[in-house]
Image (cartoon, rainbow, N blue to C red):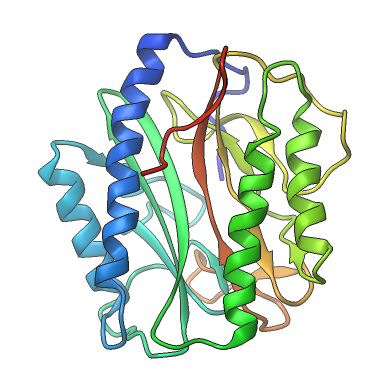
Length: 259
């Protein structure tokens, strides 16, 4: 993950409106995927559906071609199954089966401004531990978001996520973090999913944050798969991922990617 902008940029009302348009489209994609994701569907099917929807709105897939040490990312979505944490590359030979959980991370660009969101889906009938993982990960995201208020510290967001997860015996991934977002996909500040309350930078009106807990059933350690992109849990345990793009406004927080 590369942070092209090291200084935190506060967005104007007009800039947030552009991000709002991108974000609402992204929220609709993730909602529509509930009808797409089922046993027998491939991860490539998910990618094709998402990219076609993005382009039908005259928007641009944010992830396609993103540069890293591994070269340009080859797809419009990241699709990660079971013990895959993030950055799974869609593949026509990866077929979903009942009992899998699959995380889909998508980004879009609208008039030069980015939106980013992710959700984890149950495929058919899944185990009770998988259902609990999905529920807790989404809950931890929501707990973090309610701390994203002007005048509070970033550590409050991080701590709320960590406490929610660790209270049920799961762990937050520490090697990957959320981020600011705006004219670049990854901007300052970095947003860890662990921390101490009342520490870190002060949150201000105009900040837009991509808050994204990644949660493992087992321990927090992760490693890279053979493709150089996909990140997996080191102990082989299940992992889930939820993300929203959130604006800090004078009236509180606004979840831009919420449908």
